[in-house]
Length: 389
Image (cartoon, rainbow, N blue to C red; front, side, top):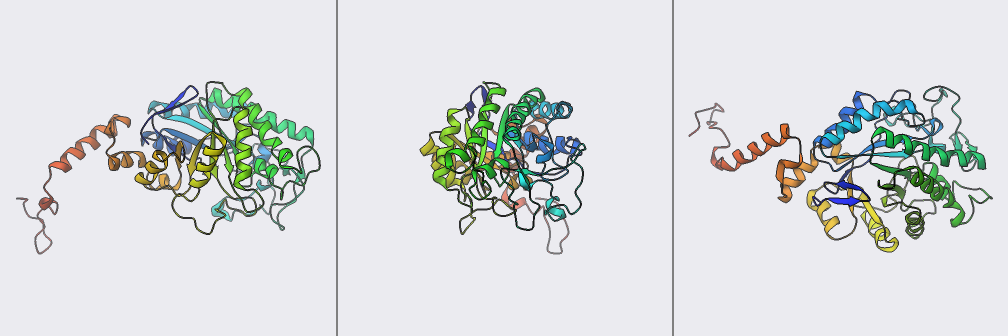
């Protein structure tokens, strides 16, 4: 886990990745001090690759009015401040580029998550039209989206490429295309959401076309020495199986995708969930393992990866090349520091900022020196502190 890895021309100091986590805290698509604090603490905590949350290439693709955006140049400068801060601590900044398709125009999760009853303007202004592969709603009681024309599809393919160019200007070193969790690219892949009769619908070959075109255009616009990831729902509950993901991964590798981030679900319900009976520790790791083995491409494992020895075993056993951690990092932003200590990994505290590393190393040495019998600091039978002996 603490062995560096180089993907194309980018070196990660360790294999620990902050998974893109939606915070829904932007205003008209723009980042703020919240995002500097949110992402900066993971870089300071020792994470190798820090992903910015799902960032939209088109304002119509915002899941909520509070999604971050990268559909014009005005978003670049606020991002530059954050990427520079992340790099100060030896971490690599990454960004996930996305479009939510028919799952756009919703309330934030803690405000009910469902479609907004009153249709607001787009983040940044304008009419908020829902678009999708077909005029099929996400749920029967949800709004019916407009089916994209071929010109509309081409414009969105180009939107991913333009966003990748802006991501480069903003200082990001890794781009991930979000093709999972029931969002637009996943909708094209799905026989349930995609009911087109042209070259973008019907057969598996046709349904994969949009994903491959987005990947190829993003790769064309993204520097050749920087990695390109794609997050997929390796399986879902609506007709997409692991065999389809293996085939898709082979096609994506051929157009320049370097890493497949293997999640699951999200097509036929509001949440991305496992399609298996249990969601125990590492429940999605088998997907990453199989895609890696059968498609011959690097993968990133995600999903209830909590413990240091668990993450270490995933990598040592060759089940994935990277481990992505989300909610456990919310609980403990210093998870990499804690993991390094539990695994006895050198260089100890050298991989975190000196204002932390110096004092934590000093604390570790003093704890070794303290005798177990003195930890109670001389509390007597009445609960009063006495002089230590």
